[in-house]
Image (cartoon, rainbow, N blue to C red; front, side):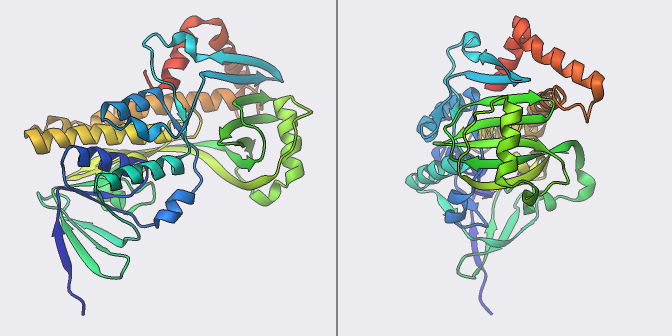
Length: 394
């Protein structure tokens, strides 16, 4: 029987996604020892296609920690986006509200940001362990939690630490390690799904509402990522290429929209869930481990980044200065921000879907959604509120 390899560190971070790697990079720069465990391989993380927009506030956060270069790989967003209602274009310019000279948002797929964060962590001699399986957490309600796992060679390992950061996503082991009686889950199923399509079409930003449903187009490098509202019962097989391009042309109000080669397609339902509180003993949940949010508004990755920022500051105060107040308030601070973003995203889901297809909200809901949309372009206060929330400054 092989012996158990035992080690100790200050913080064990479960998960090497955007939130875990951001937290790890901050801690290592604060001279706080940490070990990152990731179930997947580096190749898997770098190839996994996931959308991402780094808000102006998140760009400032990286700059504040001396890590501004990690988001340079993203394409700067020019602050202009196009909405279409029944084929009629409306251009929204967020730059007119940039009174504090905020940095530009960056259009950066998550796998690209992961790649740069891994590189930065390795440059700082960080301890990152891929292909760590069978992770088990114990002693979370004690002063010395223990994390056990099997490393990539098959050896059993045990880490004793002071704190555990659960950055391993919605289906990870971290939240499952908390007794069910200690968590409250609040969820919403929006009753609609999106077909996600990556295609060889020149990139741009367009969000279109029409009687036949919602459609959107966003840049993904030199390609475009399209989103089409569909039934929650649809599968990828229900959407052959011809149907996709027919629906896009109709919903965009653009009969001449050129078709491009489609690389992949995926149907996923829109839903949101928040778990409270975001901590248990010495375990702190970060990002998707604590909350998932609809992709409308691009808030998921940014919430994860802000959770990591908040936890990094709180851990630094506790470990280096002996002040535990910020750590005690971690969950409350993050949840306040989370619910603010959930409200914004949910209201956008309702507006963008109900303003076109009235099958969910009916004729009355359709009129309400259109009134809200038109107010974005007729009221300076409504436009400012939208801009601040999109930039992450509200």
